[in-house]
Amino acid sequence: MTDGPTLAGPTFVLSGGGNLGALQVGMLRALAEAGVEPGLIVGTSIGAINGAFLAGHPGPDGAAEIARLWSTLRRRDVLGLHPRTLARGLAGRQRYLFDPGPLRQLLDSFVGFDLLEQSPVPLAVVATDLGSREPVLLCSGDATTALLASSAVPGLLPPVSVEGRLLVDGAVASDVPLREAVALGSTDVLVLATAPAQLDSLRRIAPVSPSACAGDGVQVTVVPPLEVTVPFAALDQSGRLADLGYRRTRQWLDAGMPSAAELLCAEDRSTHDDKSPATCTYRARPDRRRRRCRSTRAAGAGADPWTRTRT
Image (cartoon, rainbow, N blue to C red; front, side, top):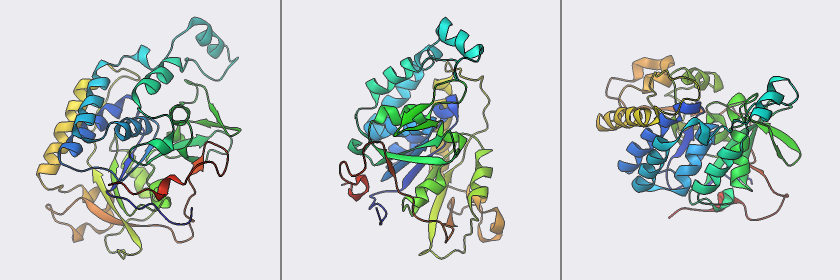
């Protein structure tokens, strides 16, 4: 793949965040109702799962369906607790504590497509190579396998073998996969983070400057994240969180996307006023090669998924 994808809309970049992924669901619903639809989705960890759900159920009706699913989820639906598995993990005889079976069943039943390249909206999933700790992009092959790899939290869920490599949670290497989206050729990016602290990682990825040349840069828009604290793996508040994300994003959209530009463009605040769009220009590092989206099947099998144009 030598050229980037031809996209019909912005690239949605969905961060990790565990059960705070419910906030993303509310954001996605508000964006869908406003007619903001992705041309490409790049997700890591829970963001990859939400992205796959959206890719399989696009539009306002699909986003509402995803929100209804989240409102019914409980911990047992994603983390299988078996005494033998737990005992072996606590004794150090295996690397994980929980059975991924329930999560696999959930993904198989709701994603809506078997292979990543069959996704109605182009989808790239970010995982982490357990050995090198480098991010790995997956955009073809078995969708459930890719999503299980991207969400395999070390110590909680087992690593997933893909092409002979053990992969774990994508958030380990790339909690907000902006760099991966840029490497795939995205030029218009909408970031859906689950916590304000994740914006610090965006600043560390590369300098962000409103004065960067439009031809060389990438337009980055950040949906303002909420500061919310919930117990680890508690899903009983998912409906409330989705509603918070929805209402906050609706307010932001109705106000013309104000002030969030400062979240990334702190280096040059004087170029923005309170009513400026929440956008700024990201200059990709010149020595960074465009990343090839790694196939989960044998090399050469199937068509390049990035040659598609959505209509």
